[in-house]
Length: 145
Image 1 (cartoon, rainbow, N blue to C red):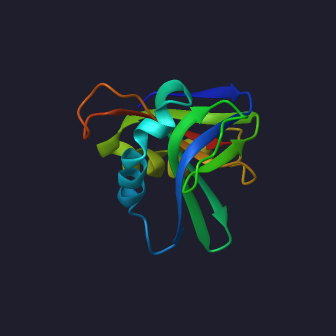
Image 2: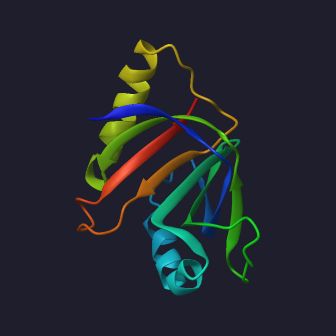
């Protein structure tokens, strides 16, 4: 399991968003809605990768599935543009099938052994690289510091 630290400049993600409570974790429906709008989103994207943006709002959390776009992208009805601030993230490479195990490793082993603390003001990011089958698709998990 590869890990590292990455500094990122601010960027915008355009896509579809849904709010979940702590008992819900299935973001598959959000990705299906995103893929239904794929052509509209991809036409504005500046990167081929897909981004999941997850941030807490109390006991609930919002999840945005989309692509990186120019900060001045036109937002069509039913889409959301979320601005991710600049910052530092711990990055873990995994696959879709290994995401839960990777999150568990990050929170239970990596953070306690590192000099870093989990940043709560920025979202957690999952970045998907297209070109492989769904279950083996490479994913980079970005956990804010």
